[in-house]
Length: 201
View (spheres, rainbow, N blue to C red):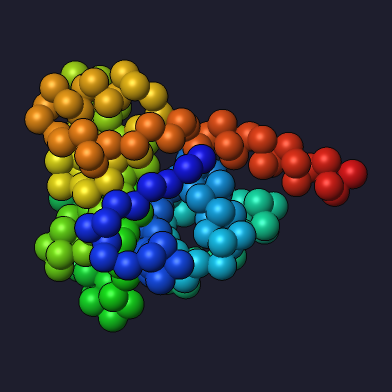
């Protein structure tokens, strides 16, 4: 997966400080290749885990088995109504971002964690990268659909799986300079996990 950050970042990519906001087990898996890339490039980053979905043993297993560093911040938000969950996350994430001062915040998909991370970054003028951007169900009764639309429209970098999502975003008025076709990180995760397994046998 290839990430392109344009000149609006006003610095070389090796000077970036990247905040990763995740909160569900699928997000851990889908961020796995990105975290490995950041490790390989020796870039500065930190992970905020909201624990939107939380199982202590399963979470630990995911980070251990995928050989990725444990989150620097664990918010332990847990299950609430959509509004309360997002509000609690928003307050906690904003506080961390103000302290860490990242160059960019990466969020993935369409969860309440994704929405809270993007909103927190947007409010304090930190650039946002949305991984798996541009997906649409066209069913606004789904909370996830609302989340993905809002996050796409406040993001500075939209990393889409393929050209179909590019077309969707362009029809919604998003500038093409913000859109990058990168493929789906779940594919990268499968290949990396396979490699880890082979190395252990």
